[in-house]
Image 1 (cartoon, helix red, strand yellow):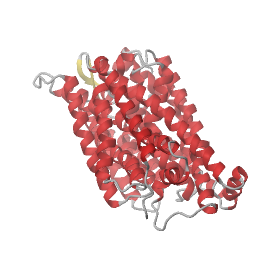
Image 2 (tube, rainbow, N blue to C red; image 1 turned 135 degrees about the vertical axis):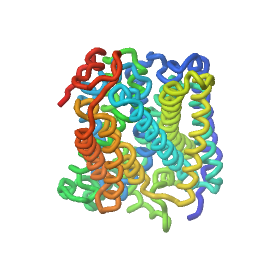
Image 3 (cartoon, rainbow, N blue to C red; image 1 turned 45 degrees about the vertical axis):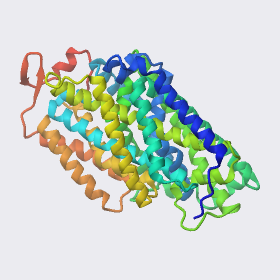
Image 4 (cartoon, helix red, strand yellow; image 1 turned 90 degrees about the horizontal axis):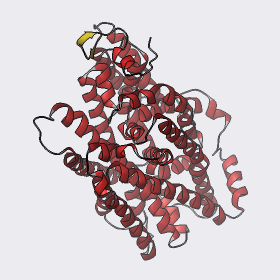
Length: 507
């Protein structure tokens, strides 16, 4: 495929955006470097709406901006059930999970696992998060790299290095406060850019909106009755909705990048408001991003054809650069970068929180004298470079349908941990040896299910329930203990959590 070129004006717009994001990190440098509380939780002074915008930008990112339209372009709107699942679980989060994390005042989600099961589960949970998010950083760096290389002959190593490197720098400088306010800017740019693509795309098609709707109905690009049939098909809405519930439970209860934001507001009430803000934004996302894919399908069916052998993961940036006015295209490519950077910066800050709090502070605080904020910044550099290296592998193999790759990673490495959190909160019988066995058996089960024709969403359902069921059954064969202020005692009724004022439903 011939490279169409980005153009000088578009490059200027893109560079101005990247420098501005770097400026945000510099602005918050002084406040973030005081201590780990400031660096990881912004000292609890973020307003609810900003925290909600940050959660939104973190969880949806470049995967939303590029892979969601790709899914609608190739298939239909069935994956939108995942956005509905986000909204559906908010009451569950507010009633059951948020009180635990806020009352225990944890910096990382995995501190709860130690309170409930002991240090071994804290280490396992934190380590799995770190590995999973290095992989996620790789996918998210890959997408804007793909966006630029699809329209430019610039070496992808240079692009991946710039994208990842700038994220590393402003995350290194600004800490969580810088990350959240960058997320707000990037979230607004992400949504505004998507709406602009949607509107301008419709205007370029002869017949406009009516042509788009007609093409979508004729080619089954929206929702049909077949989408509601259970089965192994990836487009079965019931499976997508149920699987997305467990994917989102992982992200909102067992993933440090989101849980960390629960401590950035001043109260439980503010945290709850941030979740509702995020939920509303997730609903708004449906017509905007899936609509973008439907418009692109109509455009490339009526106006012009895609080049032979085109990688559909790059369809959004290709349309932007080849069709939209100069300057506007640069702004929208910047929106793709914004979507990417909001996720990368959050992942890097959260990885550094896990390494610093769950490993250094927990096990080596007395022997390892390195300043915690310095260590956190070193971790950001190292893991950022690892993520960039993995992204270059994805570039070299020209990966397509990156959303399914991301979902496969989530089902294998993320969702089983969400099952462990659920066991800890909703049962009193589960114990450390049992849930460790359950975690291992769940990972094995998920791996073999992925080898079948089941969709990634069905894998997530099986991963969650196998983690819970195996963990609970295995726990029956071991005595149940817990730590409290008096030492090691037989666990009977969640003494630690009752003393801390946290309500718990147990069985």
